[in-house]
Amino acid sequence: MNQTPRVATATIIYESMFGNTRAVAAAIADGLRSATTVTVIPVKDAPESFPDVDLVLVGAPTHVHGLSRPASRTEAGTWVDDPERHLTLEPDAEGIGVREWLDACADAPARYAAFDTRADMTELFSGSAARSIEKRLQKLGAQQFCERKSFLVDKNSVLEPGQLELARDWGRTLATELQAPALR
Image (tube, rainbow, N blue to C red; front, top):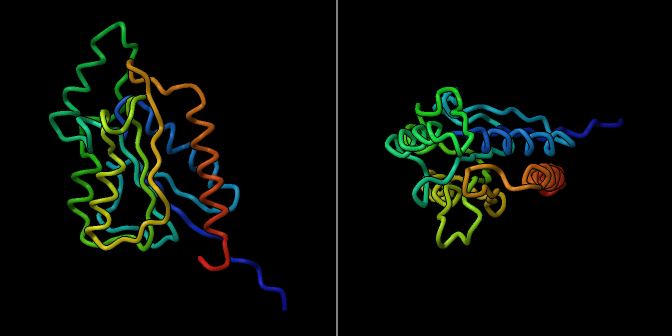
């Protein structure tokens, strides 16, 4: 009897201020869809309990070397008033962030991957929201699926060229790894 292989499932939960992290989350999802069923959820709509899926990806923009806080989201919101930046604030960008959402979660996903958007400079100087996500998920007892990934923005908070293709490629790599027999 032929058995249809089970399709892996993934959920991406993200925070975004100016659309960069949202665009990266969508590109990762495009790559994952090559072999995975994927759901993408903005953090404001994320449940306080992790979905029962094979992989949860959590992403956020880097603020002040880590995850955003209400004050840093408010400060970023003022950047849209600078006409030279050409930025538009995402709907509900100043609402709940990944930091607060993770603090409210009582359980942990089985496996996770973390990603962020951050300034195009060494992580030593920019910091990393993904590093903070990893620490919080590990504290909850989640198992890391792969190394964290950063996608870079320029000094005007615009994604650097090629970053969305890198995100799609990463999604395809994750989908392939999720299909490995040892992981099912």
